[in-house]
Amino acid sequence: MTTTPETSDLSPAPAGAAHTHREIRQQPRLWRRMAALLAAGEPEV
Image: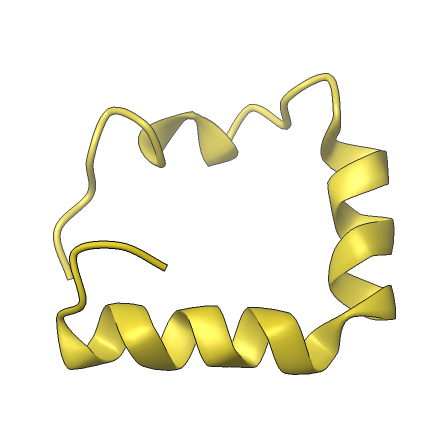
């Protein structure tokens, strides 16, 4: 999987990291679906 400028900034945690982490915990199915679509090569979610 290639690293794009949009995702390469995940190493230095962005300002909304805590909020994003909470969303991921609250909506695991949504994020798994998004990950599955990205893995399948879908251009959009």
